Every structure is written in structure tokens, then in C-alpha cells.
Amino acid sequence: MLSEKIESALNKQVQIEAQSSQVYLAMASWAEVQGFEGVSQFMYAHSDEERMHMLKLVKFINERGGHAMVPALEAPSPKFGSFKDMFQTLLDHEIMVSQSINDLVHITLEERDYATHNFLQWYVAEQIEEEALARNILDKINLIGDDKGGLYLFDNDIKQLVGQEETSQ
Image (cartoon, rainbow, N blue to C red; front, side):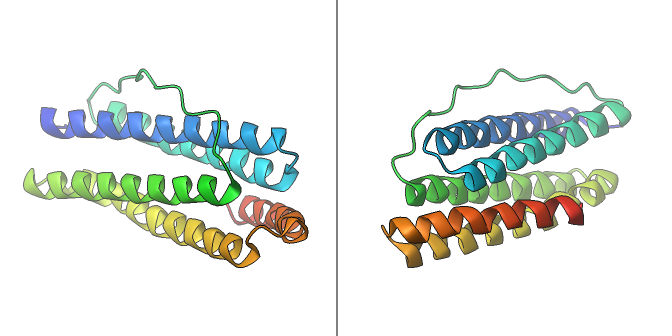
């Protein structure tokens, strides 16, 4: 059984994961309009992944006797300036999500809810991967700079990354 405090905190995380899905969907659409098929595929896949993270939380809350709430979401920005700006936004967002997960883990320890603590360890590990991936991509974009040929090659390379992630899941 979930305490009210943990149920509330988990529902807050449901909203964060849902909002993440929306943000990445907006990024995918923006990249697609810019003509970057690889980046858009990558962002569409990450939008789907964030939705799955949300659903995993919803099912956990309900299975533990709580009531998962479907949150209202803010419309994300439809514009991102440049790919560097977009991937910096992605990294900043992932850092915020990591902090939220860490706060949630802290609450589970305070409440002595070790089942939820154990469940959240998957999210802790996932966030390490998400931040590392965003940093890696941002590092590559910084190396490329404003070189259009480099961005073209990057777009093709990121298509391979989407394929690798799909086969590893």
C-alpha cells in the first residue's frame, strides 16, 4: 500500500514523464520540418520511450493500491532555434528529470517504502543513460559547429542510433 505522500510524489513523476514525451514530440516535429529525418526519428522514438516510462509508473501506482492520475500538460515550445539549442534543452530536461527521480527516491527512504524504492532503481539507472546520451550528442554537435555537411552526416549517424536502441530493448 502506498502512503499518500508517495502516491502524490509518484503522480507528480507521471506528469513529468508525460511532459517529457510531449517535449520530445515537439522536438521531433521541429526536426522533421527542418528536413532532418534521423534526428526526427530519434526524437519520435524518445517521445514513445518517455510515454512508456509514464505508463510503467501508472501501472505501479495502481497495482500498489493507489490511483494514478492522468495529468494536464503544458504545450511545449514548437521552436528550438538550432540543433545545439534543442539538444541543450534535451540535456537540461533530462537533468531535471534525474533530480525529480532522486527526490522521489529520497521520499521512499523517508517513508521506509522499500518496494517503491526498489521499483525506482530502474528509473535511476535509466536517467544515467539518458543524461550520458544527451551529453554525447551535444558533444558531437559542438564538434560539428555550423558545418552543414557535418549536420547532414550527424543526421544520418543518428538514424543508426535509433536502430541500435530498438534492437537492445
